[in-house]
Image 1 (tube, rainbow over the protein chains, first blue to last red):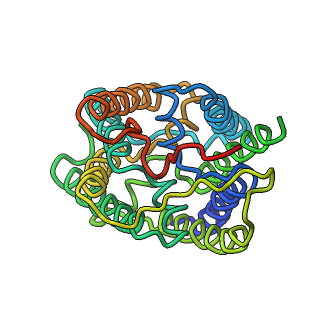
Image 2: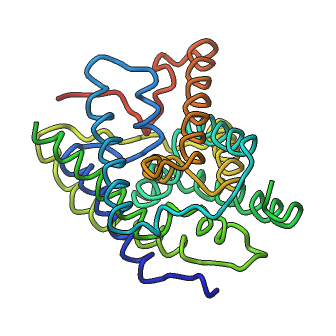
Length: 143
Length: 156
């Protein structure tokens, strides 16, 4: 467990919670990133600007991270293009089919004690654990 | 204008939180999900601290009838579990476990110029788009896949 970074995890987690609270308090919305991003793909009038601004905020945050905390954007997990494409597709399709991802179901949904979100979060957690563990056991993680 | 500025700030804080927590590094996520490897419980700490923060704050916020700028809260109301929810979560979890990226961290990392998050986002968008297209074609729901987390605007 020498990779465990509890202090950073705690600070980051609280910031994520505060950002989601800000969305609820000022904008009356759940900060579900797959839903916000996905809504841009079937644009409706008057429903695109706020989504775009939120995504731009995420990307601008990435810019700040790159500048002041570059280690946070370093990738050491290497996957073949085929696996990246497959993973992206499954994440996108699954998040829309299941109405949410780690932010909407995981943070906001569990934080509201919503039964659907608790069930979805447990399910994707278990599916993720089985997949990642099997993958690393079977192919050593590099494919 | 002010609500949009607050959304932009929320996006930035969310992004910084993900980065500081290490959730933009797929190996931290894989390190948690791969329970037989060199296990890294950081993701659990991130999730619990975010959930507890949100739980406490939303209790206070939901005493209000409207949000700060007078908008009515747009919250999911369904409580039933169905196969669509669980099936979607399984598909999502498999993709997440394969690479250690989910939508938020992928968007944050897209600025790095690394090909992995960009490829991932493009493929994710295709997956989302295909879902919307199939859903609009085959579902009787009138909302075209705008699920409970994406509830229709009620009032302004």
